[in-house]
Length: 374
Image (spheres, rainbow, N blue to C red):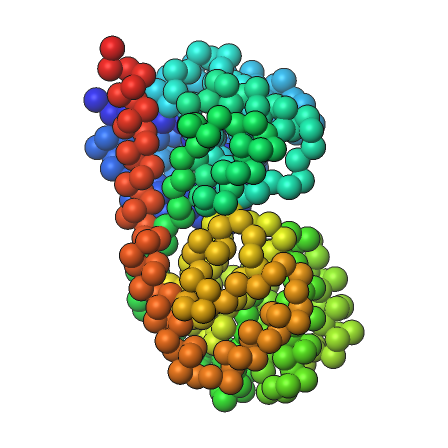
């Protein structure tokens, strides 16, 4: 008999959590699990078509406003129809409404996934988390460093928390476009090194630190180019900052792209300097692409990167340290190659897609057996 799972998620835009969900759905055992995805965005989002093409049902609930009873009632109706054995929620809005609806619907098994250290939460968010956690069987995190935050700030029972690291599909990095060809497309000189950061343009990702470090690097190594790969609310603001820093001629703003592995293949160094994170997909992608990686010491970044072996860890907002590590790597081709190879091996051994899928499937199976074996 298949285990019926309803996965509730805020939206199906192409974010890190959504990409991990898609990878899981591609690889999970259909003989054992019957999964329906519920999006709390009433619109048809970009990743919905990908999920439907795999043969899954995607249901939409139009959520609006700070507190919306209609969202709860809509989810309760879906749960009554779908009759899930397990409800699994992703991202904060779904964690709140999905769990509430599951409780009201007498769903026997509830899983909540916390994907990063949510420093933005107010006291009432934390209170809601604490109350809802009493009715939650398992809270998954994608980095060990998230656990202390949940235990101390939200008062979550540590016995309920389980770490399932993100996993990366290495086959996406098997057949890539030639780096020189990509450089021609991006109008980057063939002999220039490229330092890149992949991530949406938002306060969290801290593009100002990346660009200010780029300014210092360009003063030492003026032939270096910088790639800002992504889209978002602060993109124009960052374009203006690059112009003020005198970097506009050497900084490429690619916009939202579907060929991120090809772009990573063009880089010599991958950077991520967010204010907060969980287990960032992009770090795994840099490493899967055999690129040395520099990241801020937030969330699970230091759990993924072995400092001095697969890349470097720097303090958040430390422009000087970031620039120094970039320059060190740009001046040492053999170090870049050595760290890139070590990073690729680490992803293969510790952060494979297979391991992530198996861990999630094992959680579903264990929870089902605990709840329904009597």
